[in-house]
Length: 381
Image (cartoon, rainbow, N blue to C red; front, side, top):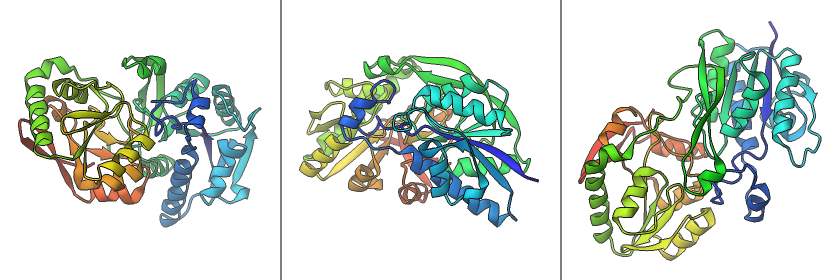
């Protein structure tokens, strides 16, 4: 039986992440001026290639990929090893060198008209909004994570997991569930405000170990006493490590720690401290690498996203594979209140580099700082 899979890529998704723009909506020119390069096509090709490997290993599957021309789909499928005869191009962007949300929506509707039974897309929450606006609940959708922020419950936890989920769906092994499509107001986000909004509901193949849940918002103030203990421990670790660069990730937990250290910590950016003094604020990838040239001994302090468990690859793309290699896997510290960690049973990473991901997950578990010099072993999922 021939299966028809819709496939749409947002070529510019995630470009603002490594250059510190916390998104790409409305700031593509600035992202490109800062040296941003497309990432989504590579991640989508990883999914396609992995899907092909899995399908072949399980006896093969006849699939026609219904897609858009060029970087929005066709080129990525060819890169992922799909034969040209298995690709049906049903849409072309008006300006392929600069695609828009309208292009995403039109491509999705074209895939629907041409008989796709599921729509696989690559992007972030903004792309998920466009897909949902175009399709509603008519087709199940599955996201390949490639944006700066991914809070919606329609994304695979990684490109490989998206491939596994798609194959399981086509073989009838996973059920379809409804999931919230959530997005941040990016202008407010860049100004340091966290405004999450529900934009719709989508149908998606759901397997808890492969598809991420929606973000759980955690109220920092309720854990104030524990946060003070964690912040005091970090302060002492800094004092005990002269000449060491401490890179502090985004989020409310790290903002509290920064305030305790009496630095000008950005809520949603990445900042750096050496010997108690702030040496970097709202850093992009290039700025972090420059600081590492000056202070090669470094620690990165991050906190997981509640419920999802990601501490790398969601909202902190400035911590690129090159940064991770320079710092070293062993020098990443994860911090969390016990209440938040209780609702986050596993940790996850999505660096964009499978070898680096394996270095983290190969540890089996991470010891998360949950109080004053108190760490709790937490497994990777």
